[in-house]
Length: 120
Image (cartoon, rainbow, N blue to C red; front, side):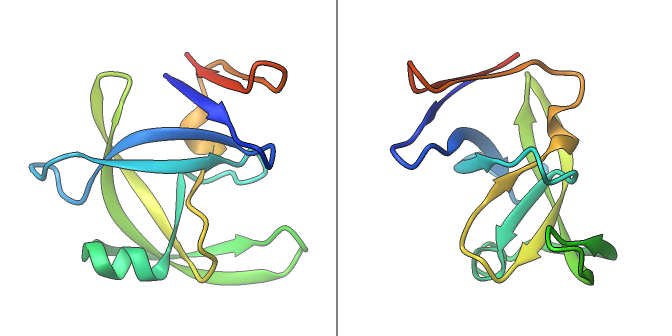
C-alpha cells in the first residue's frame, strides 16, 4: 500500500472502507497514528452519517493519561487483499486515525524527504 506525507507532515494512507461486509467500498483517507494502539478512530459525525453498527464500549487511556470509556462500531476494510473486520472508535475530533492494531505484522516506511508512505 502506498500513501503520502502531506504539507503538515502527517503520514496519510487511503484504505477501502465498507460499512457492511457486502457493501460497496468507499475510499477513506486515514492519518497513521503510531501512538494509537487500536485499529481505527473516526469522527462520531461520520460514523452516524454512515450508520455503522454499534460495537462494545471499551476502556481507553488517552495520550494525556486520562482514562475514558469509548463507543466502538464495526466496519470492514480491504486489507492486503482480504476483507478485515475492524473496530472503529468514535471520536469528537474530526481526524480519522489508523492505528498500530492494523500495522502489526507489516513494515511501515515514512519517507519525509520524498513525501511518501509505504506499508507492506
